[in-house]
Image (cartoon, rainbow, N blue to C red):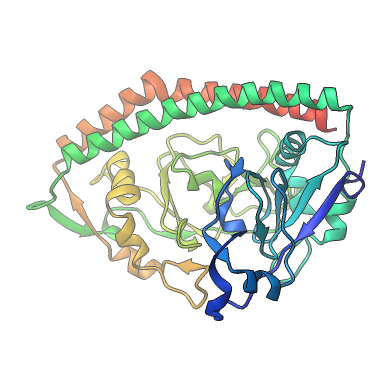
Length: 382
């Protein structure tokens, strides 16, 4: 079935932002920035409209239960409206008829994000039109089978949430240990970052396919591979097999990757690559650096991603408020405290013990559950 045959599609708009009487009212107004990969229900919004603002933009109110779908900057974020609300022009939202369950549609769309993104068109921003969304086809089983799929996937989702909670607790343990060991950097030598790593280099972003790579094929990392704080190599876009990857831009074991250009909430985030299967390039919006023997990778990674994150972000600038850029020359001058080598090794050993005892097990558990989830979603959405 085409979505337009089983849903009413609601678009949005933005009232004039400089007209004060249009804002700070009681009408909820959602934007794509308020959704992320884990969004499910949205019950409130960051901004609210007055009745005058609502009428000025000829907005339509979306009923409770509407499936929210972002169709620009970026395409493919999904959530469900837990309350009645309106939206800006970055959405094409779906009010479900009796033929389709909104939870089923939510799960179906989440499983097909890559397809939605591949449909995007536009020179400045890729975007889906109302016609694109209305013509998007899904396999629509009977309502009882839809509800069965929702029940199974909800159970799987609960398992994922519990595993991630355990993962976050261990991550907090490592961060607390870092603070205990390196509470003060007074008296320690400080060196520019460029003296602590082999180099600070940005990557390449050649033309890629919309899908992830098959096993052992070359690919380019997506920013989501590092934005969560954990290196996720499966977050990538495949390179055409007839392409010529730049070998020097491949990720290596022990590298630190740092987002050099993105939105303010993502720029400056970094991760340590403990292991890579190879054949993965890093994009031009990411800096790569490899610690020299003077500094331990685990220590430097936690220092950059936690203690010095705000300092790194303060280096960013740019003409567009929505996109921040960290200059290489300024990042290289960042002063890095160098604790005694024995203290760095002690912290690295603690991190390794945590990794051995729980991190790897939890990551494998989450991966297995997510694989089951994808299989169930594939079965019901194709």
